[in-house]
Length: 284
Image 1 (cartoon, one colour):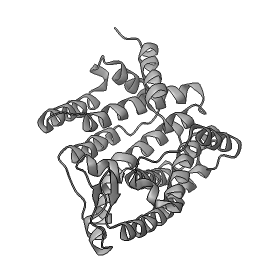
Image 2 (image 1 turned 135 degrees about the vertical axis):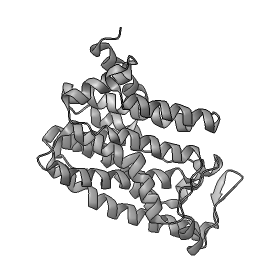
Image 3 (image 1 turned 90 degrees about the horizontal axis):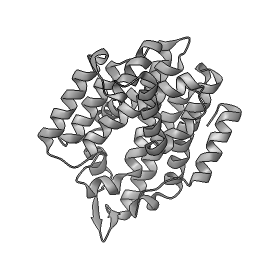
């Protein structure tokens, strides 16, 4: 039988090897919160991977249904990740329903849901990213948890908008379009990939991306007041994770053509600098 310590060790290893941007923030937390957040990450990653890995739609939906059932009966689970999540939920007020909402968001990916308006895209962002923000907040804690939950959700929406912009080319190659269809049409954008380069046509596409990064910037402004509601280490963790995406959003805004040829990312040195600033100031 897996012990709780062994279960957390599995989650921490998953976080260490798979988390990328998330790991820069989680390292700044004290031990008990770091372990709990690694469990949150490990299960969130498992759910996300169901959507991303190759497989039949029916099989993926069955896997997602199994996760829904497991989250609803955590104490009966023996899988190490679920054992760790169950323990974390006993120690912290984790909103476990958020995992179910995350499953709903991934299922939307699996069935190929498209979004006509920005409001519809925001709904998707709340499912796949706002949920993670609220789960993290359950570990962090806040005096006004209701208000902080709204801000955590908004910050998640901001992060996901940057993800969508960064991955437009990659997603299109995989047969997915997340950008709102009506917005694209109004902007004169018809997404395509020719010789590996994203087009739409180019001038209209780049103008649209600039507008979208400006809107994402507004959502960061909505969500980042969360930092002032957290304790120092939790604020540093959140600032480190969010700061990476804020800077990525600004890079896309400054050079939108960069997303047309590959997947843009910050170098490790820049991510480390964000983490150091976050720890020193509690800000992005």
